[in-house]
Image 1 (cartoon, rainbow, N blue to C red):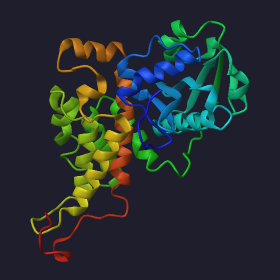
Image 2 (cartoon, rainbow, N blue to C red):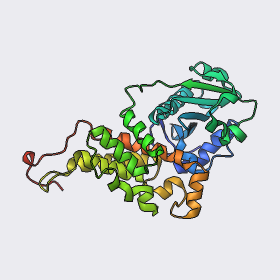
Image 3 (cartoon, rainbow, N blue to C red):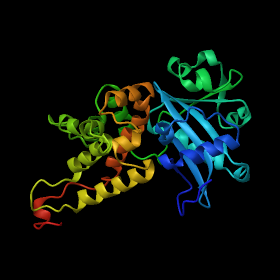
Image 4 (cartoon, helix red, strand yellow):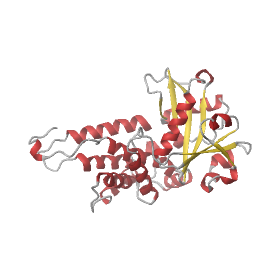
Length: 317
């Protein structure tokens, strides 16, 4: 377990959480051999008194999700920690636009059934999910498969979900991270122009595969500028600066880093790094960043309009 000071009860796991996630899974005798460093951001952790007491993972496969590694240490069981973690993973699945989530378990069938999951045959799992490491090799053949359909319309608490889903659709269609985020946000703002998304291309893949700032985050910054950026040197910078600072801080808190190299744990500027990106399914990990960035860019500018020159004639710096 770990001590971390004051933190929210449930948050996205950071790279430094990996040993503590493994410790919880080992303690609860759950499979964990496939948990590579690049997969940590797919997990959420529950913190109590500075300790990691519960974990859960979400993997995405062609429009559906796999709930994995739901574990709560014995001293924190019976107080809804597992239910909160499961609700968090389901909300994340909705944010990614996933229509259904699956779970495999040898011990918790009744727990999932009480939460509207139904038993399905393993042979009926979607092709991409059947081909996953979790289904093929990690979970035993004796594991029960369960499924739950997610609401087509997200709950009101999931802010700007549609733009997140749209960004992932663009990303899956071949647009790169920054392009997908900027395009989806521009569509949401009703401000798609000829320069969008091509002005974002150089910021993709960690600023042109240099290992720099996450392209999804760069796309969010450009989207904020599109919405509340200045149109004249006499307009204030504060609306854009405040929104960007909010998104930057939240992104780092949520994912534990802001650079492409740190987030993926690979340098995609190299052939080996790009091969690892493909082999380890890191596109799925980047979907999370793309969806989050698009939603955050929109939510950070809700109720804010671009400043007008005749409203303020001096600069804020």
